[in-house]
Length: 215
Ligand code: FNR
Image (cartoon, helix red, strand yellow):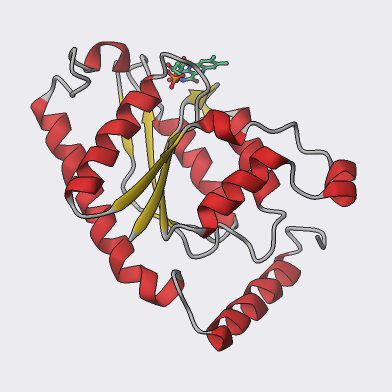
C-alpha cells in the first residue's frame, strides 16, 4: 500500500511536520510505502472560479492531485486555526475537488494535529473531517491531537510521553490495517468496469446533493 503524508503547514519550524514524521516512521515500520511530501510543493493561489474555468487546476493543486492518484491512503497533520480548519488546507481541498474523477474519493485518511494549546487542535480536526468526507474520503474514526506540542518532543523528535507515543503507534497501525483492508474495495487498481460504475455513482451523488456545480 502507498500512503501520501504531509503536514498542512508552511512554517519552517512546524510542529505538525514533527508529528507527521513520527506517524510516517510507524507506517513505514508496518511495511507501508510512504510519500512524505512538503506542503510547499502544493503552493497554489486562492480558489478562483474564473481561473478554474479558464485553465483548470494551478500547478500546486495539480501536483497534489497527481500525488493523490498515485496513493491508496493519506495521512495529514493539520494545525487548528481559530477553532477550525486552516485556510490553506481548505483551499487545497477545494481546488483538488474540482478534478475528475474526484481524487479524494475512496482514499482512507488519517488526521492528526499538533498545537501548543491544551486542546491540541482537536476542534480543527472535527472541522477538517467535513470537507474531506464530503469529497468521499474515508476518514479514520480516531484522530490524534497533540496538546502542548511545543514541549512534547525530545531532541531526537520523539514524543517525551511514552503513553502518548504508544497511543499514536496503536492509532497509526490501526489506520494502516483498516486502509489495507479497504483498498481492494474502494481504491487502488480497479477494473475499467468498476471504475466506470464508481464514476457513475460519484456523479449521481454529486447531482443529488448539488454540492458542486458541474466542472
Ligand atoms: C493558531 N493557533 C491555534 N491553536 C489552537 O490550538 N487553536 C486555535 O484556534 C489556534 N488558532 C490559531 C490561529 C492562527 C491564525 C494561528 C497562526 C495560530 C496556534 C497553532 O496551533 C500553532 O501556531 C501551531 O504551532 C501551528 O502549527 P505548525 O505551523 O507548528 O505546524
